[in-house]
Length: 525
Image (cartoon, rainbow, N blue to C red; front, side, top):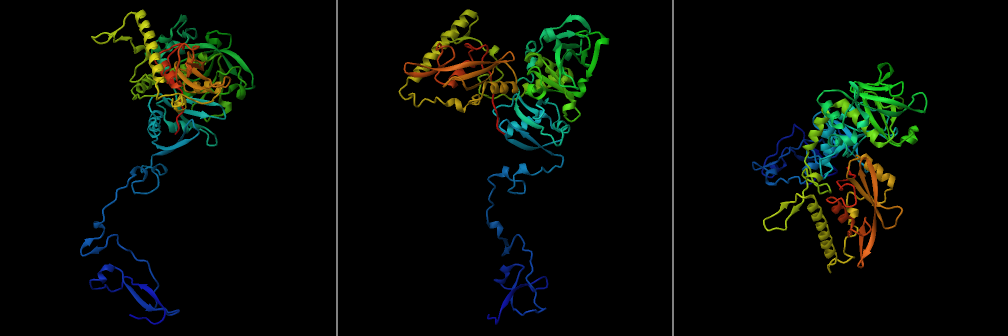
């Protein structure tokens, strides 16, 4: 068909006639006609959009049915509507979810949707799954106030959104996800956390109380114990610190206006346990002019964190500060803490860089003798067990020396830098920074890290926590038989690398006061 002059396409609307014929049937519900283009002609209809159905039919069959469906290879990355937008960036279908932001120790953060009643334990479990952590034990959410230098570990039963509701909108408060091995350590070793000189029976002034009795009596709602001792308190009107004798009872915190007198007329009420939270204070000397580094503070739990609302207290040593902060938690929550502790022990345990798995502790290991033909036997004699340990250590050193002398494992091929891939190795951090890392993750016996020595070239330092103190052991390189080794006992015990040194001391104390148990690690979110 020939058309004279310019032409335009005109799509018919609802008043068009349906085409007929086999070829025209392929056009479906649309038709195409050609009309001469006349300028300013009112009869000309411009192109209009039309609705094209999803399925076209040809001979009564759907065209789409002949094409096989292609499955989505990454369904977890897309929303249910096959949207390319990540699920984490979209709100969940239910409107009762809230978005929270949790930071890691590597300065990165992760946003996640939680329910209004989500507890700290549930949020930690979600973060363990998303961060692919190797274990689910001893994780905690930390409430951190960087400007004020305050931090505290959220209890497992605390509701996260209720805690965030007490924060100031313009503040820099944040949640931090990290390890805390000391959260329930006072249940395991009460003597270390509650010195008997600081415990007394509030009903009987002359009667003392042991550390175990303090916890047992409190949980059984028997005789009410109390914690007592001198603390430095910062006076609110000025920056001076004053030494005052304090008493902590289940009814609240009191101070004596006359020395260490317990007489009611000399006791002054300070705070109610039900309405306060206890925080540890970092860098307290610089921020608040504290007389020591062992500072903590209490503040009302329902108010925004303000400097004028803080009750700053300073202890004389770490054990005293730990005793007070642990007693605040125990007196406030009581049986709820014991319930949290029992639930924490039910968490599945996996390999965490240590050899103590499946709930085994150092006290559950026994000496065995497999030299006989009838099988192994338990060595009951302590002297025989000690001798067997020395023989096993010597045999172990001979096996490792033989392994190092193999032709296909020369000094060049030996993985001498394998320690750099381990979680317990922290590079060239300083002595002060190593102590801070161990303190943040809980001062429990056996927590350790290895770092490069800043004073001795090519040497390393093993930083180990024991009895609430951090000790440092120098690891020096030495040569024997033309080969390089590492030692901590002047060459008596040699190790081909730091990984072998750690594995050995995880089951043998050697010159250390305690075996290596908990590596100080930092997890990236």
